[in-house]
Image (tube, rainbow, N blue to C red):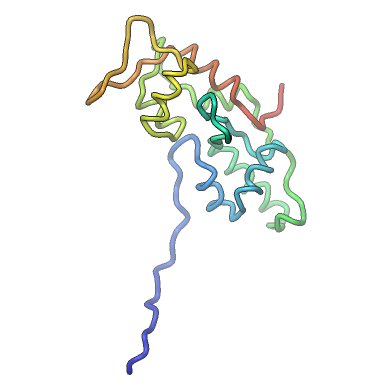
Length: 174
């Protein structure tokens, strides 16, 4: 009977995260940490994150600032790549204002549209709709989302900025 040999797999390159935020699962892969360790890094301020959970959720739905993950990786390298049990770098130096500025779209419109928010928060349409329905994100007066193509919510820019300010975890206050 012939023996089965596992084929060699190509060496995987580290994925490039193009989105401004990443899920806990993505951070676990990048940092080679457990979910609890990632959450601890957020709570201690080593990573900057937002809890985007809809009201009434029993668990936080974290989105971690991709830039803070990059900063953490660089700081870990400076410490000689210590293991988690040997201690972590100091809290992130990213200021809340700059973290929020990295997420708010660069245009001057008084609103942000659903696809922009979904990309920024790295979430799905239904999660976005849940936030709008819960009035956590306010639609621009006179607008209403609908089903189908181009039916996304139009969210007031000030509401989105307020959401980011109130849901931030892990950034040091200026």
